[in-house]
Amino acid sequence: MVTSVPRLVVAAPSSGSGKTTVATGLMAAFAARGLAVSPHKAGPDYIDPGYHALATGRVGRNLDAYLCGPELIAPLFLHGSRGCDLAVVEGVMGLYDGAAGEGELASTAQVAKLLGAPVVLVVDASSQSRSVAALVHGFASWDPRVRVGGVILNKVGSDRHEELLREALDAAGVPVLGVLRRAAGVDTPSRHLGLVPVAERHADAVDSVAAMAALVERGCDLDALEALARGAGPVPGGSVPWTPDAAAHRPARPAGEPAPVVAVAGGPAFTFSYAEQAELLAAAGAEVVTFDPLRDEALPDGTAGLVVGGGFPEVYASDLSSNEPLRKAVADLALSGAPVAAECAGLLYLCRELDGRPMCGVLDATARMTERLTLGYRDAVAVGDSVLAAAGTRMRGHEFHRTAVEPGAGAAPAWGLRTPVRRVEGFVRRGVHASYLHTHWASEPGVARRFVERCRTS
View 1 (tube, rainbow, N blue to C red):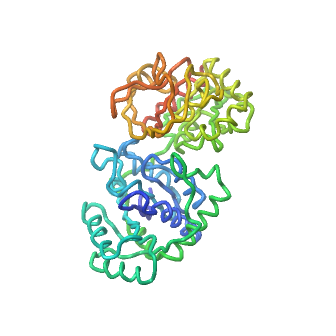
View 2: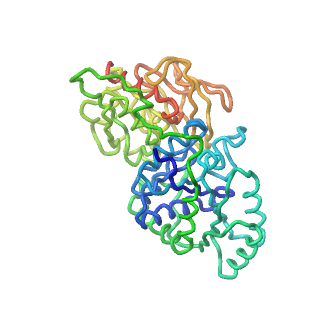
View 3: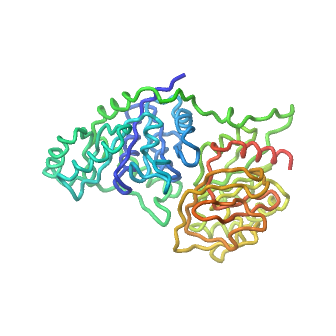
């Protein structure tokens, strides 16, 4: 079994240094060399993996030690990188930043150590010269188990600026593997929750990724970076690849019984999902069919269950509301008792209204945009039995939204949360489980098995 995938982790001293530009550009540049590149993102980000997928032609995957536990990082990495020549992992925030109050947990540094991967540090050099050596030396020496194999200097202003930076770094003992000048075309537009997803600007996103690749090809030593990746050695700990079939433990289906159809919302309004969710549903025996609530006026034929993940329904509230036939179909499915799992954007879609516009009316609640950002990891326990989990099931999740739902919980809440304060949230009603909490089903694959079984029997 191959456990020695050549790999790099692209990190930075802080957010905004250019990690996404460099990581995506490296992925595209290596792919242009004919390499099969496996793209990964540390942390709970849903948007960057879309750009990674454009760059590589493969599904972008997340590695989150808080949501999944440190023990699953290497197996999930090996699952995603199966059959690839090289893997690139984009970090999250600053190199040593992790879950608040949890030490190194979920930091880029922890992921790098769990993978035994060398780190390439991307430094925004736009406002410094000799100080860059102190900064790089500090990051390279802070944790001796983190191997900083090189630095890429970003936003370098001139040849003289580059000369000063290189002179300063000579004494730091960390090689300069790239120097990137300020360039037009590589920036991607942002809004209230970060970058605009690929699904909303596909043609422009293709151009952006091409510009990132060109910038990296011009400014980076790709041969040296590839050599660094190939020197990574085996993934530590004797890990074996995670597989959805083994995780789901699918029960035998009676002969001749068709697979239940699970409809999964997609399209520009619902872009937030982890690849392993659909894989687990399929492994648990479902036929997974994607539909677009902005365009499709009916659920897929034979729908037995519905999954509506995260995204930006607030941006598309008018169009979602205008699709009355689909809103009625969703409401009828929920009323029938069929399993419905909704996260964040899905929760908003199931409400009576969003910013005054009618939604599906499955939940006796209203939703609205706010100025307040709700962001952070959460420890959760299932308050009662639902189509996803038995009462007492513990999962970890992540909240990330600028909306509010009133009331915040139903008579039967979905989760009891322990962080940052104790509270209940979400709704369980008939076959509906709706919550703000984003969860990674690989951490608790029984939820997929339970959901598909309910689809089969409801």
